[in-house]
Length: 222
Image 1 (cartoon, rainbow, N blue to C red):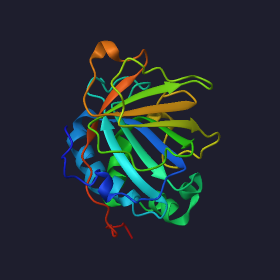
Image 2: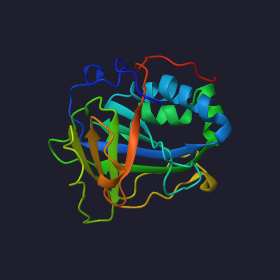
Image 3: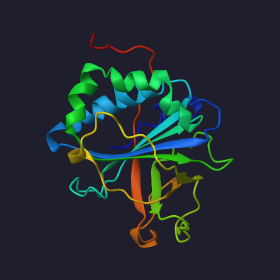
Image 4: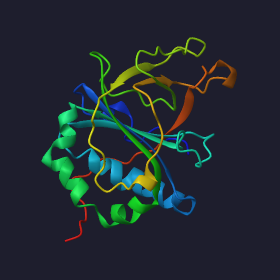
């Protein structure tokens, strides 16, 4: 699904503060829930998260080549820029986990292959990324170096280091867990999709998905 060029993923709609941490989530969804998932995720879920103080920006992506069957290579990737990792322990964020909206409560059991990383960002890389239509991603082991030399020059880059002992989502059961393993996340924002032959080994090309504006209030179950 291509992004709307006027949607709120444009940097003009983002908080101008620079993030120092990154929350990265990969997931698939039950095939029969795909349309409902994208509507919920774009219109309610991600905008709701952006109402939390310290959640500065978000981007949604999908891998057009993903099958939805491999827990090591889920279709969807969502990135959140955080003021710092402590935002995820704050009461506003924890309240969203404890008190899901009715739509979130219905969607949670449909999610699968979910991997959740909390990462540290190097100085100078935490600004809201551009509204580029493509994102090339490499997941690397500790000490691994990104190899994207054959691709076009990126509009922006991000090299995140995974933090240890990040708290798991309290509602997630083991059957829903994914298998994205590594210690570093290297992202390159691209203006156009590169030729497949130029993608480095292990790199995944994601297409940006639309995102509605953040909102201040949500219907909640009593």
